[in-house]
Length: 330
Image (cartoon, rainbow, N blue to C red; front, side, top):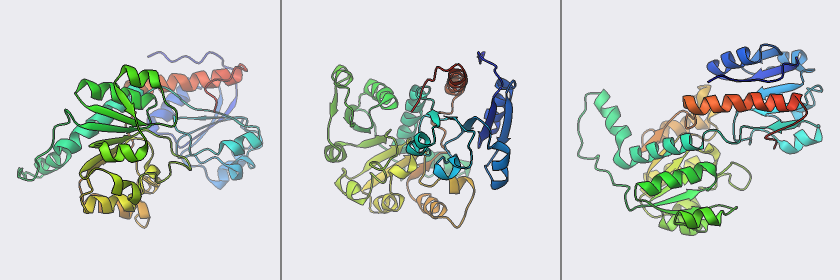
């Protein structure tokens, strides 16, 4: 894919907490600009970037008033993600800082990954794979379930939720969905029933989560929610980890209310990445790995095709800012 950044007016740009391949790409694509790149923003970096006008950050880059007041030159932030719960938008508005995200680049990619996780926990593929690596071929406890004819509950019928619905309909699943904003035309055209959360919990054999993380959805799936679910439900989360109360999930797995869970995201997962063995996240993860839980490394949108699309949008966002034609603003 040929990436195109149309305007090369030199800007001072800070790049924080990107993956190595992303850093290589940005160095090349933004070579005409003055770049300051750091894997983690430290106090000693602030003096170097206080006059930089643009900041590119990942989902780990927390932006709030505390940071903004130290960066008087900052005018524009591009988060290298769709989600933006790591950015306090009210604080940004107060400091006159515009924010853009990557709103649409990997919905089908996430949907494909979500269905892969669903098949794995339905047929115990993750457990069988782990055993075979250890030359253990005991199968008596690995009987799974077909997904055909089962009911999938989708929490958050946005772009990724819709792609998942289309794919799962093709394999014979029934769909119920909950969303604050309802697309009745899409639901009617795809035989999807909108329901309230309690009904979704009680009817669903599988539940997938695509909602954003905010004050309303924080720990949305907790003990009270698990107690309302059909016994033996399987849950797949490719949204944000903190939508699930992890200790409550562990208890639901132990008492077989939840038969299996697949998580691409994890509550307070930065502590897992940093290998903070004293953190709650590390303790929760260790406990979950003793149960019927599959955990991947936040890679649902990490395909070559999706990353190529996202990278072009990053450049388009920067071009829009430089040319006075902001796009994808939050």
